[in-house]
Amino acid sequence: MSPAQVNTDAKSQNTTAATRLALRYGVDAPQTGAVWSDTIGLMLDHKSARAYLPKPVEPGVIEALVAAAQSAPTSSNVQAWTVVMVRDAERKGRLAELSGGNPHIVTAPVFLVWIADLARLRTLAQREELPGDGLDYMESFLIGVIDSTLAAQNAVVAASSLGLGSCYIGGMRNKPAEVAAELGLPKECVAVFGLTLGYPDEERASEVKPRLPQSLVLHEETYGDAADAETLARYDQTMRGFQEKQGMTVIDWTKMIAKRVGTVKALRGREALSGVVKGLGFGLK
Image (tube, rainbow, N blue to C red; front, side, top):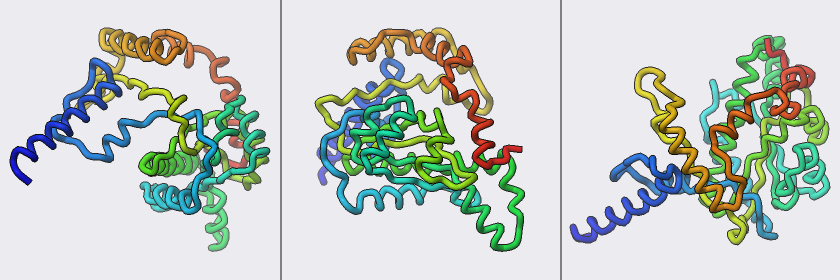
């Protein structure tokens, strides 16, 4: 390759990076220079898919995604997660109702429910004639939640690389006991979230949603100002532009988030989650 071709390729790559960063951050996009890869580009392009084509997910795809999920880090290699794949239309419908009525659970060809799973670990301890008392503490519950999340995000990135779209469904935590019953979960298992999966309908696709400027989330050595008013004002403006373009209700992000966390009522029933999780067998000491 000639030096001219190398320079042209580098310029094209930098242009692609700049465009993608501008979509992700707006006016506060960071400067990455030549630090770029196809994987970074794929991740920056992520957007939730809530409209899917009536096209099935081919055989072997789910297995590949689970292999990617199992390649995620896991605390002490305990692998405290399980995923339940749901294709049955009636079951998807019931899960959609339990989640608060997300219609894309029904229209997506596959719905994956990610489970924090301590049941398998309890069984292994008992087979060794040990009580498994370490599972009765908050740390073990957190391991299950974190392991599930890391695994699911690996699967999302892998799905994107295959042209699939996805959308996380936190509504699985609205009625976790009912979800557990629907999926036949044993004691010490709880759905952390769901994930719709399928080929996105690009004619009804949303655009990349801007994120907070890095100056608010990336701090050096010690915690800095994570709520700088001037920076947040610029982000509010960026989000208003995105909302207008998408035909959404226009509201400052800061006001929207204040309402989201401002009252117990905003939790929509999830304020009872700790009690329900204990009812599902978790110790949470």
